[in-house]
Each structure stands twice: as structure tokens, then as C-alpha cells.
Amino acid sequence: RLARANHQPVWVETCPQYLLLDERSYDTEDGMKFILSPPLRNVREQDKLWCGISDGAIDVVATDHCTFSMAQRLQISKGDFSRCPNGLPGVENRMQLLFSSGVMTGRITPERFVDLTSAMPSRLFGLWPQKGLLAPGSDGDVVIIDPNKRQQIQHRHLHDNADYSPWEGFTCQGAIVRTLSRGETIFCDGTFTGKAGRGRFLRRKPFVPPVL
Image 1 (cartoon, rainbow, N blue to C red):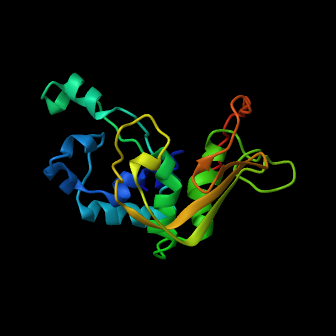
Image 2 (cartoon, rainbow, N blue to C red):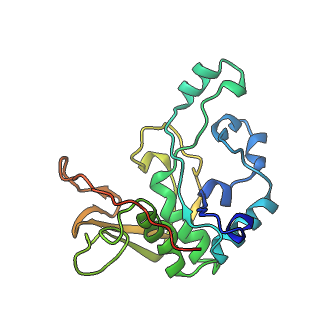
């Protein structure tokens, strides 16, 4: 806020782990699973982040997704936590976690959710309006969420290369039931249905910040 008040072009992101997990995770037997940078803080810091999410100070919710297995963490760290690879897996759960903890609790509106997860990232990466927008000429990428469906996160149902999830057992109100890429269904009811090779190169434009 201070940088923006001084007319600096600043954009801010946070991640679900900073909104929903706190430093108590380090006191468990699985504390190594939660080593990341910056580290998890206390609940009071979460409240500040949620304020930034709701009032626009934070622009994007990302993940910093890392798929280090527990075996890799143990092998590399050799008992020294300061040598443990940093980062958590979680890209597959990003939208569901934010929808459940943000939209369904009334912290943010559905429109703000779309801005944080799609519209603003597309602008920052120079992909707007091809991405991040539903309009003639745009790609038609759509995520459909059923707000009435409750779903418990279990790593055995995920599709990443990690061997655990920091969200294991976390119950979300709202579940992604279908994903469309360029108008074609590539995910439906927990099953990936896309075909290898259908991806395409995305040409990006320079991001031109608004005049502050």
C-alpha cells in the first residue's frame, strides 16, 4: 500500500497456504511437509492477507507449486531442516480452496474470485483478452464449480508428482465438476479427458501498467 501510495507499479500475490495454514503445522510429526519460503505465520497474519484479498491490495492468488516428495526432502536435508527443499504442492487445489474459503464464506464475491484467479493473472502475463475473459474471440476456457457439492481433498485423487498433499483431509464447500479448454471439455467429474498434444504456444504481449 505504501509503494502504491508513492506511485510505484507494484503487484502482489499470495497463496492458499498463507491464507489457510499457520505456524502450528510445524509442531506436528509431519512438520517437514510444510517447509516453504516465506514460512507459515500466525493466524493474525492470515487476517491481514484476507483484508488485502477483499480490498484489492492483493492482485493474484497463485500456489508456488513444488512437487518434492518426502523421500527427496529427507535425502537432501539429511536431518538438517535448513537444507530441506522449499515449497508445497497444491496447484490442483488452488481454485477450489479459494472458492470454499473465500466465496462460500462471504469473504469475497464470485467476481473478485474470477479476478484473482483468472482475469488479473492473464493481464499480468500479457494474455488478455485471449485468456481471462469470456467474450467473442477469446479462447473459451471455463471452470465450472458446483457450490452445493462438498469434497474432501485426498492425495490419491490428485494428478501431481508429489507423494503427499498439505491439504489432505481438508473439506471444501464447492467442487470443480468440469473444465473446458478452448471450448473443449478436458476434465469432468474427477477425470482428465484431454488429449496429449492439444496444447498450443501462447504468444504474449508486454504488460503495460496503468498510469498511477
